[in-house]
Length: 448
Image (cartoon, one colour):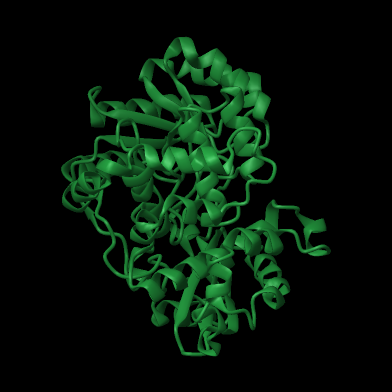
């Protein structure tokens, strides 16, 4: 109770920034649905009375970032003047208060813009907690007693699938061998796959060159964007297969472009290229549609991966229950931050579905590595069939960027959630008054 009564641990400020990188100029991040994304984020900084800061963010694609920023500002009153240790010791209760504010919840609840704002604030709180403990977030989670970790989760709406007691038991199952897996992680890292080779806006020659480059970097799993034009998909799948060989893994990603029957027909026609999964084949909200696609593709040994735009733990519960996903893709900047993501990992463990996180956008790789590393050490106890997406963009904008070695994420060593942006990045890309945007008249169109 001493820390909870210490005025120096009071949160005295919450600031939010709209920061955008003009990635649309090179076609980076482009897919069938999002043809011209500017990788962006709402960047939240919490400051304690003693001067300690915590940083968090949620990922966006340019226009609309200002709307998420407004939602963060609307929640500020729920955070300011709170003692951070009082929050951490009652984190599940605080999380529910943040997501269930009696008026704000009407424009959610627990979905869309308001939930993206929640994620930014919650991610900043976890960064702050880990910094105060002097640990990276993955280590903070690994070191927690199961009862403490489970206390951070709101089990409302999911207790029909998993209870706090079951969650605690799952975390205790492999606790005796945690040190062995932690040592393996520190030595060998965690497997990554790359999407950098396959953006929709890339030329055939660029795809070939990138496949060659990433093979030399020891990658064995490659993802390609599909869905705009079937003949183009065939050509590009063939290019990637010929470049990486049949001994390596190919995944394809439609980013929600198809209707259910269209998805089934299209993917079956691409089955000759042996994709491991089809990602987001239809609307991210269509649970029964994903289940139908999963059933239709099962004879072809093609799984369905989804989750990067899943709204909340309740939808994840239904995806997992119904057999609608064979690969669960949590996203570190969506749903309600770490607290809610932990519940998805626990449900996936109970229902025996592999978690292969989505990453690649601004800060997503930096954050999600912590979560998957915790899962390996403390929950799933295996890397088999699991991997983390990797995209080689914007890492140089962070104080503590990801470290990739032999196509593996190496465990972060610095305290926090790896979310602190360099001040130079903020100065250059803050929208609309950062130096890049001023110099380019606030547009992402090439300047002559």
